[in-house]
Length: 565
Image 1 (cartoon, rainbow, N blue to C red):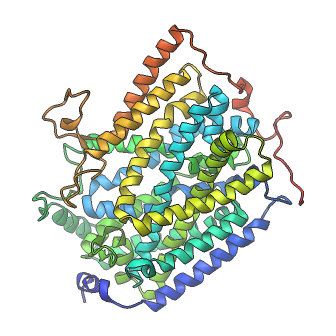
Image 2 (tube, one colour):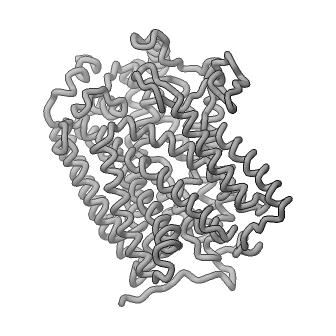
Image 3 (cartoon, one colour):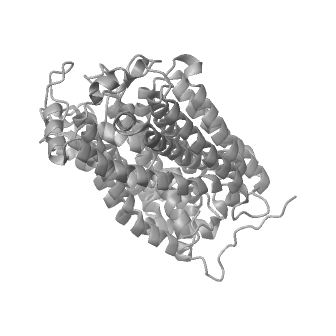
């Protein structure tokens, strides 16, 4: 029976017990590891953000490599990137150059952020901004942006898990249909509450091992089974260039066209600039033991880009195999995120498909845990302690962060329960454009205080507003959505106070990148005005030496060593 026929029957089939049992067994194994992690290289007590939220700031090269890799290359990456290639072709490969140029760009800023945070006890990027400019308001804006951008990102990890469950036959509607997901996240919430950052750090070893095995087997076995790469590319090009019945236009191509090359470049560059601005990305960096650990990881982490490139090719493999996305029983719509799970389900034996599904599911737990911890740290340090309880003790901070991590996780579950998952994807798209607007305050300020804090606030406000306005105006004819329909803005629609500088041009660009340019221009202009008027720019708590500190420096602030109470 062809893959296409099998998949057409998928929505109505029963549970795939072999796959489901293997998935559950491996999930139980990592859950046990998550609870055991509370005693792994831990201090006597985890009642301090340095211990609970940053793993004691003592992770070495291997642990950091798995932690940061597991944090950046998420379950959503493993289902969404090939799904985008499946639906649009070459444009989906933007994720490959952006993860290649990412590490040279962030190499030096990551070192400076680690050093100043280690010297001053900063736990979040908003902590750094607070100390650099003496501005609780600017720090609050950075913290809120990080939390807002992270919430839908966590929700998208659930989308990845649900795609796997749906493929295994767990595809019901209503609350019962979401019950397995709720159980999984209750367990995740409990061991994250108990173990903090050590839990995802330990689980990342299992997650990465499974992912590498599955992808390497897939990229060698599947092309051989389906007639080779030449045949796969030929079939993919034919299907992508066939006009879509809904739009009357081709859905994509295996090469970029004249209208989407600029979008590809700006999306790749904008995504690279944004990725280490996410609070969960910086959490992995700040948990490192020293600058040499970060240097080694910036050189080694591009190995994941090789994996990502191989993974993206599975979108073409799915096209050649005739894969049809499985219908979501709750919404009645085809779930494009099931493309890779459905491909594995029909082309591999059930036992191997079960391992692959466990790899994707566990791959969701690691980033979801780190993201919830990072968001909880932001809430605790930059909202709770700054505005609600200035005299909070380290133990009270840790308790608040643990509770906040629970709220964040179940807030993400609410996205899935009460909002169409596709809307969560749109929110994550907005989140990427928004977190990019923190670049001047977080990244540029690592090198200079020339930009005035009021210039940074004004630039942030303009960049945020314009990014949302541009994204709101992008339709998606294929899905019938009039707003928030994608990340490709035609230059013809680019408006500056009603002026259309590129009227008639169908060339597309990434709105987040345009908003960042506006952000920087406004920040510079307001800075010039503020400096001309001699407006006070706050007090800088940091010193020049703080940005070069390393783990063996004589005067380096020690990590608190806690005793059991």
